[in-house]
Amino acid sequence: MKEVTVEELLAKAEQPSKDAMRLHPFYRGKIEVIPKCRIKSFHDFAIWYTPGVAKPCMEIHEDLEKAYEMTNKWNFVAVVSDGSRVLGLGDIGPEAALPVMEGKALLYKYLGGVDAFPICLGTKNPEEIIQAVKWLKPTFGGINLEDISHPKCFHILDTLREEMEIPVWHDDQQGTACVTVAGLLNAVKIVGKRMGDIRVTLIGAGAANIAIARLIVTAGVNPENIIAVDSKGTLHRDREDRDVLQEKFKEKWHICETTNKRGIKGGIKEAMEGADVVLSASKPGPGVIKKEWVERMEKDAIVFASANPIPEIWPWEAKEAGARIVATGRSDFPNQVNNSLGFPGIFRGALDTRATKITDEMCIAAAEELAKVAEDYGIHEEYIIPNMDQWELFPREAVAVGSKGIEQGVARVITSPEERFKTAEEIIKKARDEVQLLMRENFIVDPDAK
Image 1 (tube, rainbow, N blue to C red):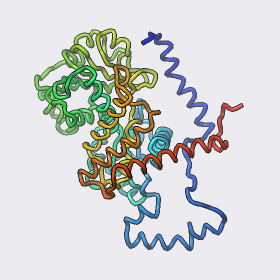
Image 2: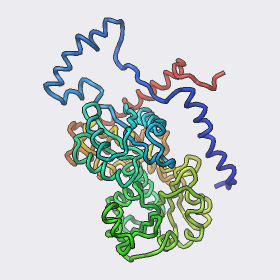
Image 3: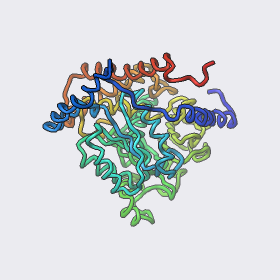
Image 4: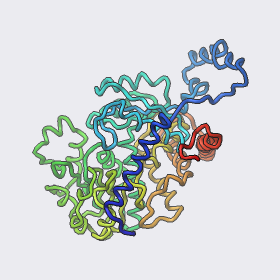
């Protein structure tokens, strides 16, 4: 890898922000609502609105499931946030979170053909958020929780998954965990190790790494071989704040109880000693992970430094220290671990089978299919996970998720994998073609066009 200066990297990292400040006010938002039905003349409104609309209304009144056939409920997803933990920005409020949720909706549409709507709530009370989402159920076929602070995000997700009959997903948990597992599966394969044998260090114990811990165990990692580190040190049974963890952070306490069999105490340095893998979802670097700590990892070490915009350690520093495979969250380095590889295809698969939930096993199925897509292209040390422009990954992921949902009995529409692939492919292609058509016809204006 060509070495570049910190100044060059920082300048490159700042460019998207500069472009965003120019283009967001130009477009005044990133999504809009347009018709999908014919309108040959004003007479057609008698079909789409009164008096014709009364007939489908009464059909749905008699059988609520027909809403999936006569409205767009089958493809609607609500992207719900209270703005309490937005990207790396923290608690900036629902209005300030709206650009992120619009962006999420844009990715849903272009990558997965999903019609997603940003719903930014004017409350941070978890019970009110739960109730608000329940009130949205008649309109939406699925719910994406986004940028909600922990620990309340766990309670909100667990409650809604249990009490709702449509899939509820928290991308900061399940999405991050899914793509991390996908990259890890191939990374472990490249270095010739086995999931059941590797020793894993998790740096950071927020929503992302707590979900990653759960999902990598489901994928075959021995929980006794995991050591997690938060701002106060390693997680273990003898923590001084154990009473607080047991009362207020039960997910973190579960990690204390089930991992770190050797009872390693200390900080990141001690947790990384002899590790095969480091999965970091911590604060931006560089310097959060030090070169000398990587040097003390096992041979053929794997380092995922996922903080944005600056990873916890620069990739070339990790490589110089002996890491064989390095992944980050950035597109300008190899091996970008990006949630956008997960949620569009996963929800496509859940919606197309009318699933009642997205289980951990469905997430693992998505991760395994992502890993297979990369394998089909030929994995190597700087390519362990697909790129976003390898668009066939999304229908393939949708099929894998749908198949696992059918197997687990959470799908209400059962069709063959071939039928589901064709459906997903057609929906996604239509979404992309529509955008390109609108750009060609100048309905989406190019601000840089001469």
